[in-house]
Image 1 (cartoon, helix red, strand yellow):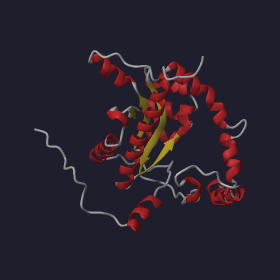
Image 2 (cartoon, rainbow, N blue to C red):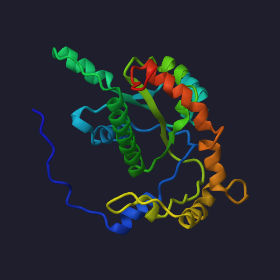
Image 3 (tube, helix red, strand yellow):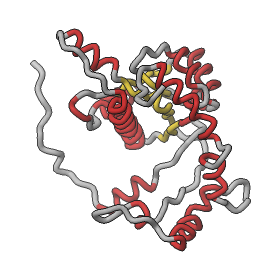
Amino acid sequence: MTVAPPNDPPTRHQTAEQVRAFFDAHRTVRRYKDVAMPQDHLDAILHAAQRAPTDATAQLYSFIHLKDAGVRERVAALTGNPHIAQASESFVVCLDVRRTRRVLEGAGHAPGEWPAIAVHFGLGDAALAGQNMLLAAEMLGYQGCWIGGVMNNLDALIEELRLPEGVLPYAALTIGLSDEQTPYRPRLPRDLVVHEDAYRDAGEAELRGATEVMNPIAARKGQPGDWARLLRAYFGQGGSMEGREPGLVAALKRQGLWAGEE
């Protein structure tokens, strides 16, 4: 007989200082030690992932656990992230509304048509589950990296992983023991991201100050950082996000997740 876990949370609590210290220890790591992850650690990490919140009970996500060396190498090449082949564990985190539709059909119910909702809640579920996985890994002493490079060759990645309609890569995620020294990275001032009761547009002086705070994140090889220039490379005209846009739109259409006009 399966015994349900207690409803009450653990009585042992961390202090506010300990919580801050835990999250300040977070690093994005791309070089890992050649160390296998024990099975009980992997089980705990996957357990944490599946305990993530989800909308409407549906759990609109799936993980593709990359185990075969050849698959890892090909996914690493497609995403432009070689550490996918080197980390202790690597995953592709996917939006997955296919399973929900199949459950409905199997029970004799007709699935509705809700592609925009599928994208909204599917990506939310995927991000929540993946972040739970990473947090559990960090609790066990590992570090990791969220990888947006799945957008670089999305159509080929869908083919490689044999993803059917209703399943779309959100990001890749690598986990392992760090083999590099990575700096503490700044974050925007809280006033710019926490709004009281209604959205507040930041003033020009606030934005300039925030840019100064963030500039170190863009520093390279002893050169001072320029965060606005880094953002331009991603989000400005001719940046990488513009280059990724057509591939994502095509993939949304291919996977039955496009709600826009043809």
